[in-house]
Length: 142
Image 1: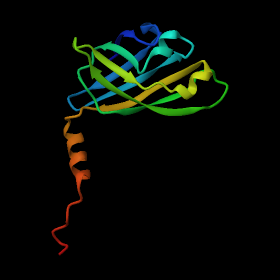
Image 2: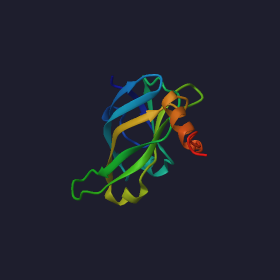
Image 3: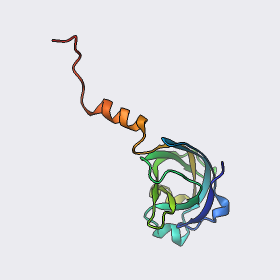
Image 4: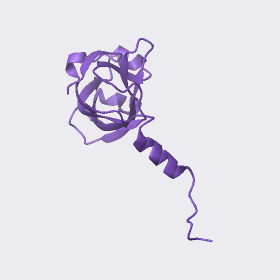
C-alpha cells in the first residue's frame, strides 16, 4: 500500500515522496526514497525531518535505520541515520528522520527506506527485550 504524504517540515513537496508500507499489529515495513535539498531554509531549521502521512496504523515505533546517500552521483558516499514513527496531539502520524548534517555541503542527499519499524509493545520486541535483560542460569549448571 502506498502511504499518502500530507506534508513535510523540510521543504520537500509531498508529491515527491513515494513510500510503500506493509503493516500489521507488530511491525511496520516502509520502502521508498526521497531527495533532501540541504540549501532549503526549512531544512536548515528542522531539528528532525518530519513527514506527515495518512494510512499508518502504528502510533509509535522503536527506532530503525534508513540509508542516506549522495544524490549528486559524484561519489559513492553512504551512511545510515535513525528514523521512527510518532503521533502528534491531533492523532497525526509522523515519520521522523534524523538529518545528516555532515552531508549538508553536498547540496542534496537521498534518504532510502528499506526499514522495519517494530511497535514498542509487539511480542517480538518483548521477547527480544526479555531475552537480553539478564542471562538465565541453566538448570544443568550447579
